[in-house]
Length: 127
Image (cartoon, rainbow, N blue to C red):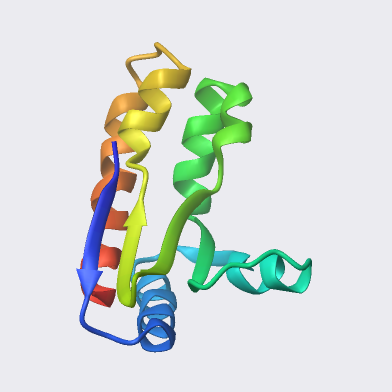
């Protein structure tokens, strides 16, 4: 249900490398949520670093939405860079797992697998 890799890079470098890999992979970064900073700014103790990158390939998103518009609630895809006890990790929930749980349309699976392969390639490149 999760694809998570450990990176030997510091958090900041892994974040920068992921952003470059997303662009190189033909996707765009729509937004980056810095969950660690947000929680700390609201007074919650959070010792780890965590950024969630919302990424999208408009062509693939268009295909998904043309099959089932309700899936707009599952888009864009998200890739996280975070630390866990001092170790940098990069991970995502595979789109095939996510979409299979939300729609039974068999035409979605090939699209989800294409997107998933691209996302995993990006994560592995940033590793």
